[in-house]
Length: 91
Image (cartoon, rainbow, N blue to C red; front, side):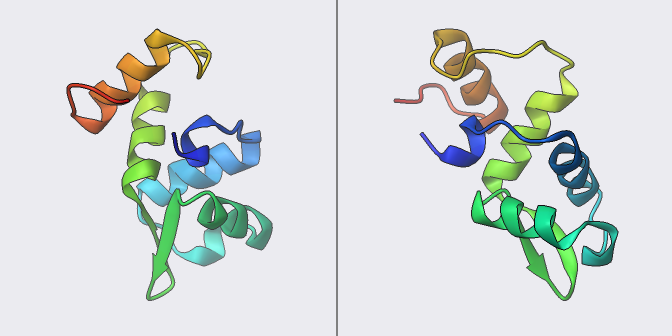
């Protein structure tokens, strides 16, 4: 499984990821958060605009459900991830 889906994000990283979902400019996010989210393959930049990767979209989809934290090693997490990615089975 991809680290970008499992790693815990700080509150500022989560805010930065939510901002990326709205397609905001790089200048709206701190350089440290920008680099970490890129390292985790959650975002990419194009023409100084932050764009979500497929992993980033899955992570934001999980935020939008307002669900409590789910253990990433659980079947519940795998099912939620599969639903967010629109696939039937993740191995």
